[in-house]
Image 1 (tube, rainbow, N blue to C red):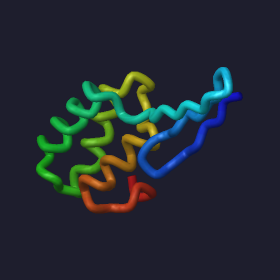
Image 2 (tube, rainbow, N blue to C red):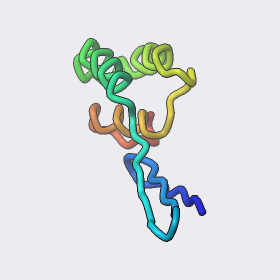
Image 3 (tube, rainbow, N blue to C red):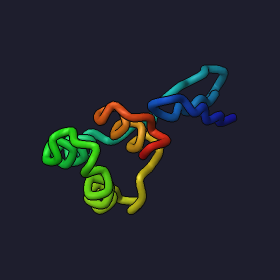
Length: 85
C-alpha cells in the first residue's frame, strides 16, 4: 500500500513492505535548491522583482513550472504567503 501525505514543506510517502512501515520525504533537491537560492539572492529579497524571479526560477526547474514546494520556499524567503507567489 502506498499513501502520499501532503504537508506544508514536502510530500511524505508512506508505504508498507513485509509488515514494516516506511516513510520518505520528497523535498526540493539540493542542487535545485542551490540554484533557486542563487536566483533569489541575485534579486536581494525585493518583492518588486517577484515576476523576474519566478521567470528565472521557472527556467531552472525541470518541470518548467513553479511546484508547490518551490513556491512555499520563495514565499518564506520573501516573507509573503505562498498564495501570493
